Every structure is written in C-alpha cells, then in structure tokens.
Image 1 (cartoon, rainbow, N blue to C red):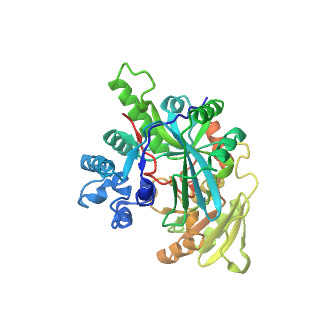
Image 2: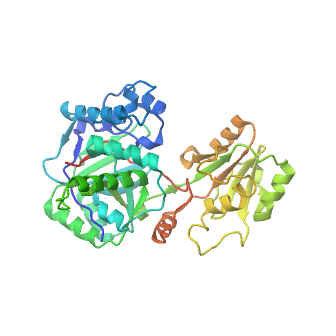
Length: 415
C-alpha cells in the first residue's frame, strides 16, 4: 500500500515565499526563464534552470549548470531566505484558479512503491530528460520540485484536510498569473500518523504530471543505495517529494493540435478523406468550436470552423487508450490523412494547451498562412487512471493540467 511520510523541508521564510515560488522548469525554455527571473534574484528558476545565470552559449546540460543550481540553492539558505524545518512535517497545499480549488497533501513517497507499481504511470520517459534531472537532483542533493500525483477520493483524508485548513496558513499569496497558493503545516505527530495510516490503506497513487522527475528521483535513490550498501531504507534518498491530490479536485484541460500543412492535398481531396472517418459540418455561424462531448472535434481549415464527430467503428470502445479522443484523431486523421506518423518527433505538428484558448489555434494558422488546427475534448482523470491501471501508455500531449504546482515552496534534502 502507498507510503506518504513527513520530511524536514527546506522552505522559504514567509516573506520570501511569493518571490521564490516559480513555475516548473519544464513549462518554459531558457530564454523565457531569463525574462521571468531577470528582476527577481530570489526566483527558484535560478535553481531549477540555473543556465539563466551563465553565458547563453553554455549547453543547458553542462556540468556548470548543475553546479550553479547547487550554488544558488545554497545561497538562498545561507542568506536566510530559506530555512530547514527542525522536525519532519507534512503540508497541505491548496491552489485556487478561476474560483476552482485543488487541495493536496505534501510529503515523500517511496522509490520502492514506484518500482512495485503502487505508484502508477501513464507516460514513457526520455533518457535525455531523465539524465538532466538525475544530474540536477544528485548535484543539489535534493528534490527541488514535487511530483504531481492523484488518488481516488478518500473521505478520511478529506476530514483531516478540512480540520487543518481551519488553522492559519504558513503561506498565502497570489502569483503573477493570478493563481492563489495557500500552504498549511501538519506538525502534530498524531495527525501525521493518521495520514500515514490512511495512505497505507490506499491501493494506488497515480502520477498526474512529472514522470521524468519521478523516474530521475528513483534512479538517484538507487544510485545512493549502491553507494551505501548498508542502507536501512529509512534514508531520505529512498523517498521523493510529491503532492497527492484527490481525483475529484483535478481538472484536465484540452490539448489541441496544429498541423502546418495538409500533406500536399487539394482542399477537395482533404475534405473527402476527412469524411471517411468523421461526420463533418460547418459550425454554426462559423464560430470557433470547443468540443462539448467526447469523440467530437473542432477543425479550423481555410478560415472555416467545422464540427467533426468520429464515426462508429473507427475506434475500440473497450480499449482505454484507443478510445481517447487524442488517439482517435491521431489514428483516423493525423496519421492516415496528414501523414503525421510520430507526433513526438514530427516537426509539422505543434500542440497548444487549452489554457491558451481555441482562438490561439486560429492565430497559429493565420501566422503560418496554411495548415489545419483541431480543438480536442479533454482527457479525463478517469481515463488517466484506467490507462495506468491497465499498464498502458497515453499518446503524447494527452493531458494539460492547470494550475501548475510551484517549485521552491518545499525542498526535500537527500541527506
């Protein structure tokens, strides 16, 4: 059963929390990070994307980058902006975006649970991205960003959360993107033991976001075990930082597609091929269409919005991957009609998170002056869990979670 245990967090002093807290390292490139952090020496981007403090010609995977990350983390502690708790605690982390709240418990999960599939995954990871975070974690000797996890709603955990969120929070600030971040500390041994016991009865935790960070944390832990053959299992390197949210709190946004050409097809040829697997009609008054039902799509092509619906027999209702809307689109249109064989590597396709809105699809097409865009119905948490339970893998770019967890609010030191 699942392990969630307290830890002696390194975290910001209250007055520095909003300055330190930063978006995750993997939602921006180096240039964007430089702009975000340029007027804020406390931004955690100086740790998570430390290349912003080096010459622009330095490779982002250079050893200098990881050394700079460690230097910047140590500096935050030495200057007193961050301090380590004297005792191991759990935390409650609430994010509020557009009036919707999601509330999770922050603690450390087990690398053994990851390897034994108590912590379930739904994505493949890339070796280069793993190597980057392995070097970052190993050099910093800490987990600097939490893994975003979910679990099936549990009323006992909910009762504890309701009890502790009546207390005064340790952090409460609104970030520059308008998302409110509130944190409470669970620093009572009896309450912590209750949480640990309840999680001990939970069959599975699911990685919602952060597969590369999780895989890297596990590999660092295994490396430390090799370096310490007499390890007991209680050492901090046997655990990694996570925030676990109940499934009913979470919302997955749509993840839309833009293809920059129609594979040398004429308009007539393209439309006829689309109609083979989809019912198709012009959307009313040619307004941008955001799908309201599963297996429906908006298609923006040559200045016109169309509504598509997948025809019966074009997918397997019983297969949790094949019935995903992103799979149906890939298997019945993007690949056979537009020639997108591998969306992971094909330069002709781009992906647009639902936070940008469907009008962003129009903008991309107008900028490119050709091509076609698709708005897609969001994948659900139920879909994600079904695929993870079946030990299958989601297609790339299937989920877009908002709001994003902030890095820098909780650091888990490995020693």
